[in-house]
Length: 270
Image 1 (spheres, one colour):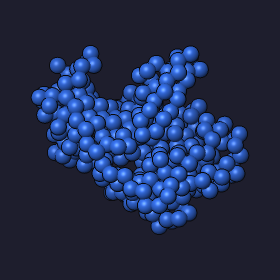
Image 2 (cartoon, rainbow, N blue to C red):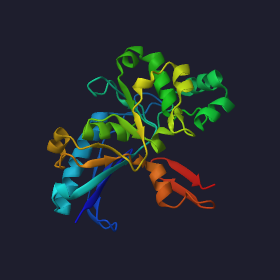
Image 3 (tube, rainbow, N blue to C red):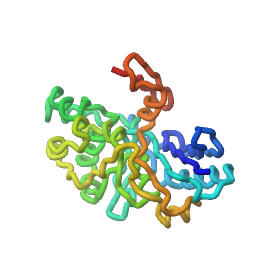
Image 4 (cartoon, rainbow, N blue to C red):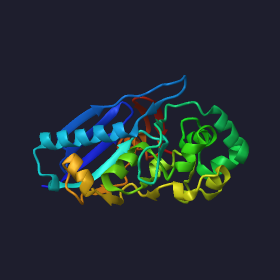
């Protein structure tokens, strides 16, 4: 029998599940990681903690499922959205991730709105400037830690750092990318005008995939750390609340979904 694995890199910890094709859970594991609040409004996590916890949860889930690693037909990723993870050319984190709950970027929100105008920014990205979104976090690092920005090879969302450690591929998918204030949502690509206006090289952003597309395969190095089989496909996946909205049917008009976790989100199909 072929099985599927889901990995959710959430705010309080990472959960891994293994299911049969009909959705029966045969193995699961949860690992926590710490959150740092060095100043009021600052909320950070260490990307390496995500990976260590993910690798441990994968091993435990495989052990509980009592299946062969090669029986995993594919892996899907979900996770906390909006965080900015800055990595160097070797894929190593340059600083802790500014996660979604970090609200230090009020001045950057004002500057972003002033730069494009509210209506134009919404036209370009389908979103206003928000402190929780990725763009203003990048702007904060540009302004306050220019040496970090100069050394940055890629900016990754949290689950996509785990994707990189699993596959060696820098990639994201549309639902998570849409929560950055950097995506041209209508045309499903990074917004050249916004990136250029903010001085963010397009090369700094990962490739964007559809959620169901294979973005990479488990590398030999990741297989050794996790117990997975090298070559296992890893699909795009989705941001955590986006996945929850789809799963609860909020893609249909008249359906309203409330998702409560470390944060709360209301989705309404239109």
